[in-house]
Image (cartoon, rainbow, N blue to C red):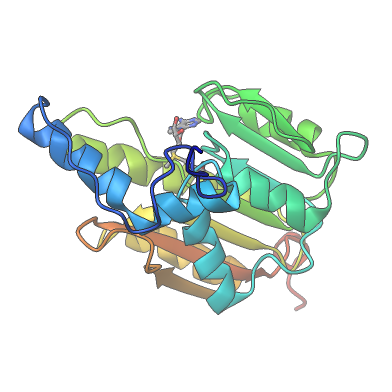
Length: 239
Ligand SMILES: C[S@@+](CC[C@H](N)C(=O)[O-])C[C@H]1O[C@@H](n2cnc3c(N)ncnc32)[C@H](O)[C@@H]1O
């Protein structure tokens, strides 16, 4: 009789079981071993998430409670789609009543309840297309965008910071009052002007490093909670 595989694990390995690969370049082997032996990768497979990144969002939510009550969500840099999977679930989004819009320049496999735009977020038409796709005012804008690496550390860093900044300005343009913005950033990377702008528009602004974000990575998340709304800004101050 063949041994049954562990539920959801396509490899049939037990959770935590270590795997060694031969005949690969040392750097590739290290990456592969780390990936395969990563408990978050294994958990993602078991729980049906497309990426281990799902746990970053879930851990941030556990601490800061940003998903509860969200009715419409925009997911920036969404592929392969684990954040969109969570977004569709919390909003109860369906193909008949879409509440989640996702964008990535990479192709992404369809997800029920999610309108996917295969487009560069920096394309000038992206904001309008996203708003059309989400079908109403979003209460959450989430961005896990990271610029493709060039190998030049400073360039990669600046490009990802730029994406974070453009995403923040987009969030301020489109969020409903009380909404939240979450974006990938780097340790020490958030510009002072960006932080000041967010503090002006949101009640709480914090940096978060979830446990599932690899300790050796400089990745962090910038969370801005409680959008104050555009009304106050538009109304002239009383004399
Ligand atoms: C870390 S992955 C996102 C993982 C995703 N949160 C998930 O849960 O599956 C970052 C994504 O950002 C996308 N990205 C980077 N720059 C982008 C841009 N300018 N426009 C759209 N997507 C972008 C990349 O293609 C990549 O798929």
